[in-house]
Amino acid sequence: MKRLSMTKPNIAAAWNRYKPLLGMLIFPVLGWLYAQVNHPANQVYSLVTDLDRIIPVVKAFVLPYSVWIFYIYICLIYFFMKDRKVYARTLLTYTICALICYSIYMVFQTTVPRPYVDGTDPISRLLDYIYGHDAPFNCFPSIHCFSSYLVMKALYSSSFKNKRNQTLIYGMSSIIILSTVFIKQHAIMDAVAGILLADTVYRLLGLMEQTVKTRKANPALQKADIDF
Image 1: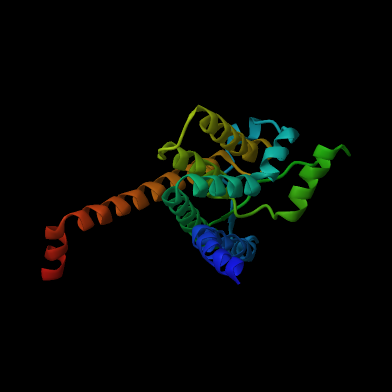
Image 2: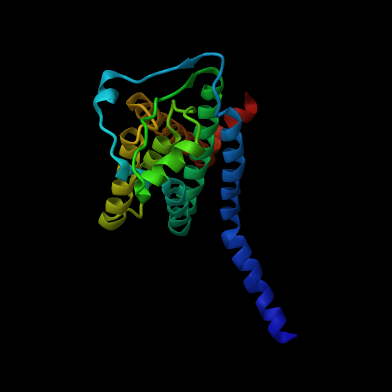
């Protein structure tokens, strides 16, 4: 009985500590919503430019592209272990950006022509698998790009950044962003729009957090709100 009573507080403490990670359960919901809008609308647009057309297909980029979501999970867990506020802000930014993307897909559906995949080597088969299991829509803005840039942005604004994690996260995120155009999953404009979206939402959330902190630290501002 004594041993049991000693473990209960430990279990409760562990639950309270790791409970915020349950926020990542939003990903299956977002994945389901993504599938609902990943189909052609009445009008499908193309944002492919001449620059996109001269970019060659580099099959090897399918490797970083295919591990993207696991990379995002790892970054979020890493942020959680280092700073829960950074984790929460990053997860909230991801959710808001994803919902904005889905809203855009519903009214402005774009596509990117995919090349024929020849070869039977593992990389070619993986690329063919990606093409076969992800319809060529939901392109603008790019979710791969906004989320990869987002974890770079989050790390940059954190207090725990160092040369090692900057090299790893900046490097991997950049490779994933490049992979979207080198395997023809996205056009350049898709990538740019995704980066701008994540940067804007992350900054706005930061400003909102700072405003709340300022008001809490200044009783006069709180009183003014009540009087108003």
